[in-house]
Image (cartoon, rainbow, N blue to C red; front, side):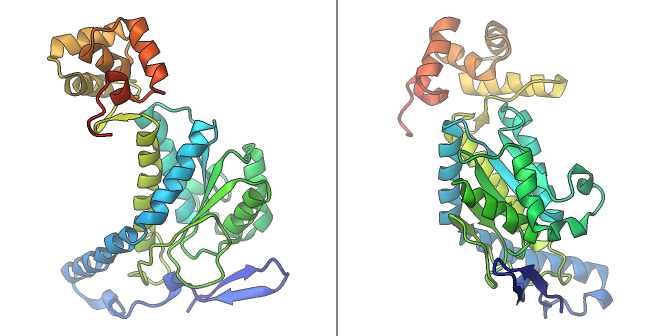
Length: 312
């Protein structure tokens, strides 16, 4: 069995057995079953992921509240990870600008070894404790930001180093791991979906990766909902940068504004392509300037600008 080793802060080497590194007794002979049985084994194992994530609903909600508070102060959400964990953070961060219309640095993903590690494994980079600190300094990480360290084992030195640095400057920290064992770094919030041993021993891109992806989806998406990037269940700050997205923007204005195609198109033109503003114009008698002022007074939350507080 593989053991994860971390050079402890005391200088001693601590050795812990990560749950993600243990063998799965249910899949020991997966190399000799039929293709269809292998598919069934994967599906069976993946059924544990939902329950593991569901058990973390409270710390996930607490993390969202920290992130929202940071956003409102002008802070950022920074993901830090190595290997699969780092790639998941970069992926989630990269989806935020097109989906929610935010600036690229509002949610950032940092991966050990740099962006070349997205396509080419840089496994050795995760062992450098000081690199986590250095990469955060490189992006001007500050106390108003929130750091989410992503590491399936919970002990990746690169991530631990980043968390220690974030704590040292007074920033809030979250650890996303899938290991209920071991000497985990101290953070404000621990999100720890225990998905159990992987189908293939140690391959944390499987159940652990899926669980982490689910959590990251919620952290970024619910945070964006809370700061007004969504109306009802419509993404209203999207950027319509191609034909497909322009059609999507039109449909969103039709749905959110409760108007037919031709009126939605007119309101989008009046709003200079701003989906949120176009919906507000469609739902009220405001002029463009009045609508902009109302949105500002409502801190960008559309249902408050409309005056729909029934579901607050």
